[in-house]
Image (tube, chains in turn cyan, brown):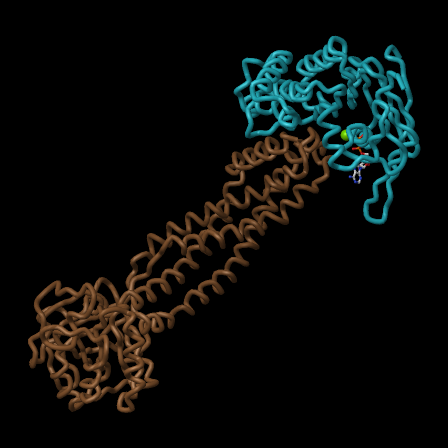
Length: 231
Length: 395
Ligand SMILES: Nc1ncnc2c1ncn2[C@@H]1O[C@H](COP(=O)(O)OP(=O)(O)O)[C@@H](O)[C@H]1O
Ligand SMILES: [Mg+2]
């Protein structure tokens, strides 16, 4: 099956039970994401953007339906299998960076490489390359608290790409940054998409952030409304 | 799968390095573990010191005779005739003055404890030159030996340390009799130092014992002679006596405080449960505070096993630090601490607390026990933490 479809969601349903109440977030969602896409997902708060991203990243599972990734189903994998799948395929970028406060920039970037069989020397090289790409090679020895928000997010991006995953999943990656810094981060994501062929799915509520993506999906009441970039 | 080790060691290193951020909670667990270990060690050191003081007093090649069934020197009686018969037993060493036999008296007098200023029983032993020389490592450290036939006595170093009124040159009144302290002796720290010694003949007359004694010690050429001596005693109906080696006799007496060790384990196990409750709180707090970090690592692909082991190791490290601290405190406070307590003959035994390496190992065991159980359940929580926690919208 040669296809350039990276993600294929079929009839995905997701609901949460809170006490006696059952909240339906998705009721039969279908969606495809192509290899090399840069997709922005927008929608009002509480519309299920994060929940969708979590299901794509294998950190949350649909109540029913199928999630296919690169020709294989991931919604039925065990926790342990999902850990490995994430390590091999996914880089996460979080709104609040989620760096380890006690580790310096280089050590933070190195974390995903500890899951590989690379030697210490090879890891060091990959970390350097990743930090150079985000233009922070000179801050390798700094702790997160010694870096600005934008710099921390760039360290987080370096961490997300250091093991060369196909897919980057970003949840409000610029939600905590000022306009100018946000633009720098978004340009970096765009570069990773265009020059390095990374597939990116980015959740945001900021239209100007979404404008960096190749296409934008609007999530509303568990349904997609596709809009043109120009529109 | 060579990576599982690097995952776990990375997580462990991160947890240890972030302990400073949970300083007070971590310190609370360290202290709880330290207190339990220190208390356990105090009891064990006491039992150890006591039994060593008694056990080290006994020699293998000395046989001690007591009246049948009397168990302790205080309750025993031996007549002069019986002593005469004993001198002919096989295996009794002889020198130029005849058989090396020491018939002794053992009476109880009162002394005032320095620590509590209360009266306590002290043994006053009657012996002669022979009996004096039979004690291992015996030495007069001050003054001189008592002169036979006089109201002179010499005082054990332990008595001098723990009781008032026995200084060299001082006069001591027991009943109507006035004694004079003319010397201080040591026997290398064992139970004999908790005694007063005087001439056995003088004691016989002052305490109306006629020509009878309470015990007799005989020097054997080796411990192997005991069986022959025992056979000799059993073969003579006039000798209704028990005989055993002096070391066996004191070993049995030394057991009388071994309940202290059990008591110490019971007390510290109960306290360990309390410490465990506090330590569990520390570790659950640690997991809660690290939740976002744990979930982020899991999102990156770290295994739940690494979260589990990281938490357990953190708990073990904190408990072990506490154990080491408790051991140091116990060593500084208790090792060599002098105390006196009732021994087998209702007399005071002066002894020193003693901490040995195998007691420290027991302290280490209880500390690791606290660490393991304090870490185990929180580690489960860490391992089962949902990964979506990493995406919660809180800084
Ligand atoms: N673990 C959960 N348990 C119960 N309800 C949840 C859980 N996660 C999300 N929800 C609910 O699902 C809805 C969608 O949440 P989310 O995907 O975070 O929305 P968004 O990211 O678009 O703001 C919200 O109403 C939220 O309260
Ligand atoms: Mg969200």
